[in-house]
Image 1: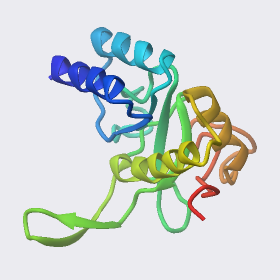
Image 2: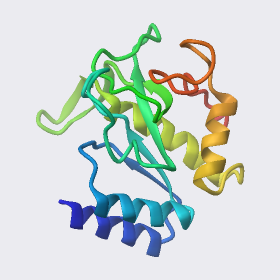
Image 3: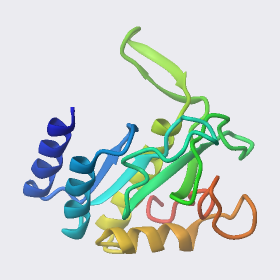
Image 4: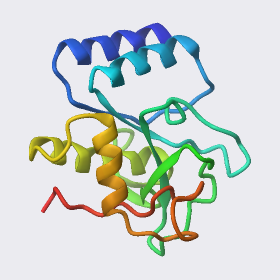
Length: 172
């Protein structure tokens, strides 16, 4: 619930965590919004799944909060995932359709789809950039992603792909 999420954010700040992935989405919640605003002001970089409510589903949170890096999903042909949430809050796109991952139900692997599977790609890139000293706060992380993105939608930043497709520069 909201209180557990807020406690987790507080724990991450107290523990010196620099980058966090939030592969979850839901409606706006003022308590969570306040906690995220405080955490990002303190330098915590938050990457979140943009949501799977479809192009007309409206903004999803925490991705739509200010200073959170909202991640959309694309397929192998760089087409947007059909259920991507969209809007001005989208920052970047990453692979998120038919991504191979662990399946705890079977003890094996499976193909997964959704913005929750795109966000970890961005989280890893930002964590590597932090480790290399290239970024240290949410604004620098956003600028880093924008500077390195491959523009795959309408020219410039758009509400489907954000700045474009994530390009790894730190994970080399």
